[in-house]
Image (cartoon, rainbow, N blue to C red; front, side, top):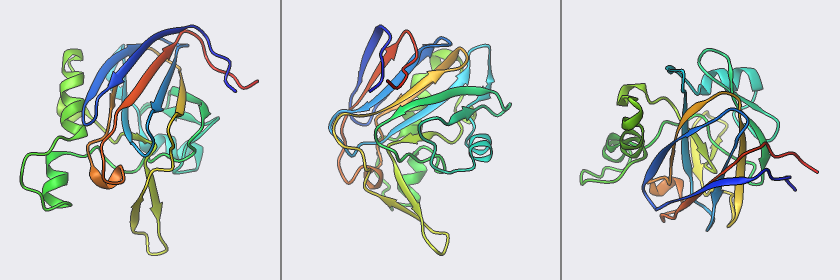
Length: 207
């Protein structure tokens, strides 16, 4: 089990919403699925220069996997470590798909009514940090279950996370972070649930 540092903050993210926060180097960000089968979109920017952001491409290149998990480093677009995954009880996350947006529901769901989206929630949550919509890249979709079939098609399955599963990320540089409770039905097995976030003063290690 992880050995905790001091818990310094806890946040509740209601269904189909998001939040922004800042993190210091050495802290641990824990993302929790309190009810199970709920995705959380995560994006990060360097506090010193928000043109440096969490990069799916760099991370996949260096880890040589599309499924980052315990022990993997998550890199920025400048090839610098942003996070290290220090504990992962779910074991499956997606780093291929972009955050759902209004256009996602028009194009993929054929839904032309207003629908909350992770992209809009990230835009609102990150605006106080002067991060613009066009700066938001592909997110780490925590707990999202995406499989590539033999033809190369992406298949979105039910998240494997159960109530209480978590992902622990040790912070490698000061960061501005956006976190959501995802708004896309296909990602969350048809229902919307909250996400919990905890911040610890020191890194977790396995006993």
